[in-house]
Image: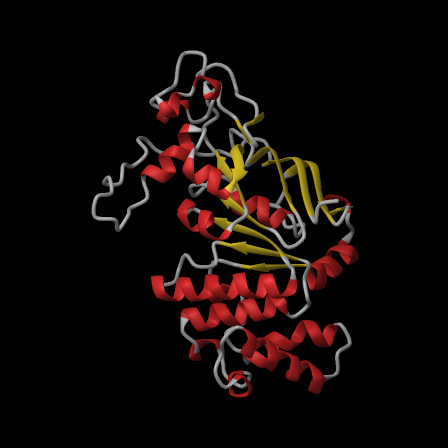
Length: 322
């Protein structure tokens, strides 16, 4: 049984709010101790898929499919069960750490709130909070507990948020673009912390990012999303070396490289499909250099393909190796 099993998840906004679903039949799994990447441009549905695992859905949205954590369906949970899930089994690290903390409360209050709600005595909760801060590389953890969020840099505050996410000993960690707002050096440090703590605790992790190279470096498997659908999935190295979907290949081609003989980045033409648009056929067809008339009328299904799966009508033709 998978730690996380999302099966056919669709999220549809109220009538008139969007022309297409935010998520359209998304399926993915995360095993215990595995790091799985969820990659795509802004607006592809990555964050919505991630938040749905915690039972967080857009107001008024209709949801279908299943989201199971350790075999239990999150979409069928009542408020009490969701609270228990969020305080222990599943934790989330958000993109902007300053949006995750109360600016007028000390870091110690932030870190111990969940522990004390679970019945941990105050002294032991503070001791555990200090241990967590030390684990994520915060110097003088006891002093840090007395400080306020504005006294931390963005990178240090993200470490605090990671420590808070680990406080309940979660089996599953959801990381929603946790390095986007950080400089390159701090990004590397935060990724190292996430990887190290994930390995130490045997935690499964769903890592959301728009950076395919970053996902390939730290993930075991990767799902690529476009316009609310999964368009390709396979092992990280296999996907990086031999993508089968034109969109995946486009993401790789758009990434800059420091190698002296590297090809200059090539941006994907056009723009992502907005929620106000619902084109027939393959949503990527209007931007795809390999699209045919069939691609513009027939919606491709995600089908097993060479150890992974791909949603492209021309994948069997080897178009990316021609």
